[in-house]
Length: 403
Image: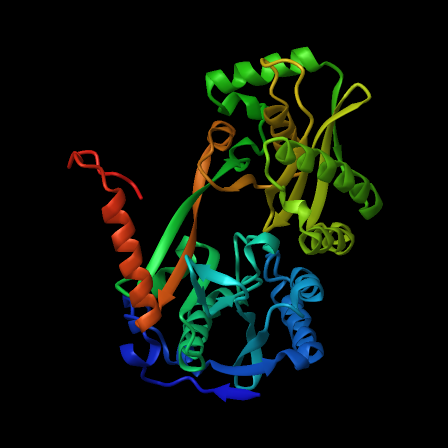
């Protein structure tokens, strides 16, 4: 194991970032944070510290929870090389994170060596595609812990890329502000904000657009006898999970695509997570029936009193005017409101369905630092050549072509 000590003074070259005003004005306490690096073989010790810190912080974050992390390690840990990074102050843990080395990461014909924070770095066909990635640390320790991790990942590896996958954009400002060597992709995450409805008798339908309201009302009239089913136990959730997988796979196979649950590793990770997380209130399955027919199921993750619509499966509607997807998600919004949650989040993407059922949007970011080496120079050259060869002959300056 190794220890990386914090310094009272850190230059830009030390951190490989441009300090922001907030870090330049930090107190001495911010720079007393040290990193202790544990190998994968020290998993038992690391997870003991993880659970202890999680309890001390009363954390409700899903992706930095011990349950999520241990389940991921059980299914991906033998595939993905990893370390545990423990932030300490005066010898006491104040933050902990998983650092992984990507497997089967590519850019065109080139294989890439990559490092990631959190449960990431899987091959694309098996990836959990983490969103709302997070570090387990107290609010005041988040920024210094992230900076210390970033510094260590740079110093301890000659990888081609360092990636921060699916973090809430605002949590990465200390890294991304003023750093020209970092690439950042921001994607909107649409959500229905339930807090304005708290203490009122208003229906969630009232805050949606007129076209969406009409669509939902028409669907409910034509379906009739609709009922939402929120799984209270792991056994109930498992039954709905298997039904959702069948519906999900049938829909994607029908358009010539494999569907995410065709990956056995991905499927088994979520089934295992279900049995561990449902009893803790960190996950559930939600289904909607019309009479005795199941029209759809949602796999819901629970993060900081927010319901995340992770995956779904739905039957094919018999009529074009009926939208099972909208009915399924609207019922989920109503049930989440009834149970006192703060929001229902549709996760990253710009699909029309997500926009219509949401009232607000957050921003999720994927950050990449690319080492200035020969391989990345070749990748950039090929990308420029590809762009120039596909560039339209006439391009209006007022309407730039998006890549």
